[in-house]
Image 1 (cartoon, rainbow, N blue to C red):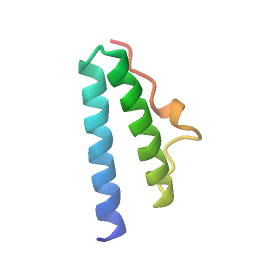
Image 2 (tube, rainbow, N blue to C red):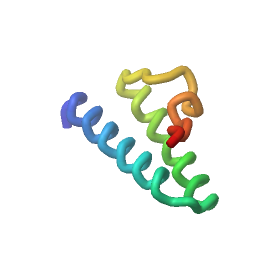
Image 3 (cartoon, one colour):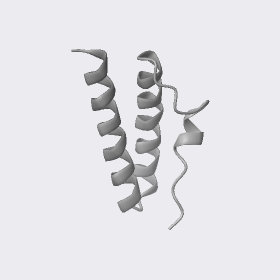
Image 4 (spheres, rainbow, N blue to C red):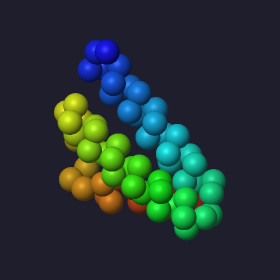
Length: 64
């Protein structure tokens, strides 16, 4: 798999994690999504994508 394909798939997963996190109000699921987000953040860094300095900066829930 090419690097660009990996980045595309990671970004797609990122969107799915955020969508799930936005529509569920369960603290347990919130914790799981946070752990998944951290692992995804690390995977993106391994392929050279730096969106933020730390995962918490990029995981802030959007105000609605």
